[in-house]
Image (cartoon, rainbow, N blue to C red; front, top):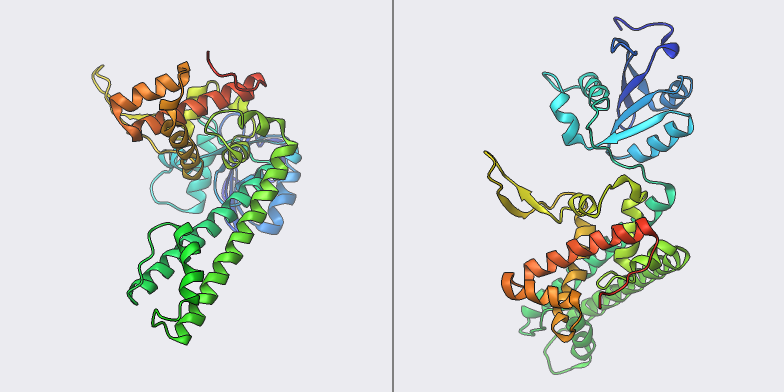
Length: 347
């Protein structure tokens, strides 16, 4: 293309790459900010081309496959920075296409105050994959139980809400010969019950794998000393955070998880709204569930931490107290991971 240099390897200082599955557009500039690369490469060509470049700054959008390419480019000696797509969007000029996106990425990665996404290692992605599969299996099991309840309701048989009620009621319903269920429907119910049992086994297997990983990591054991942080939350935090030094304070971690209020201030008048719900929804959900478990029994304890929770619960209600505990646990997690200490309860 125009302005492409034949000797680009010696002049590229910043490179923006628009990632895709098979077609990748590259936009590179020199020290003076002049364009020296503007080309499209296939998946097979990309790694070899980047490997032959001298060390430079490479910008990527955080999307599917971005962590894989970030690890590969880093292995070639480059400095790789990933950015959330919403932070790159303001730098897109006119109509959107791959070339314009790559140019916007190249421009955005050079901004001194840009926020970057930490690169995940293989182990982090392994743990996250276990969590994603487990979460899907739990959703399937819940849907299965709700379907069973809905089908039985059409036959005049009511099972209370909750998967444990379904597990308890189904064997009795299948053995009861006086509930007027046909042989065909009994066979169907039995198959659904067996499928729920299979999902239970799959979920238990994944949780055992997470427990084995947790036992090998001091940071996981450290996090599990926090009230309201169990196996799932600790391993999910480990998979999501990686390098804790990326966050300058506990509040930054809480904000990254979407546990701080949104702000809509102007004219020097601060206006705080509900929590922002930015970041990882799954991890935020785990922290809030953990906060709920602590908040529910706070009245049974007399230490400073539980008295603080009880006071918030009395003044602001249960839901806000649950989020407040989740926020505090995120900050405590940052402190423990930074200082390499276990949680010590206040007197």
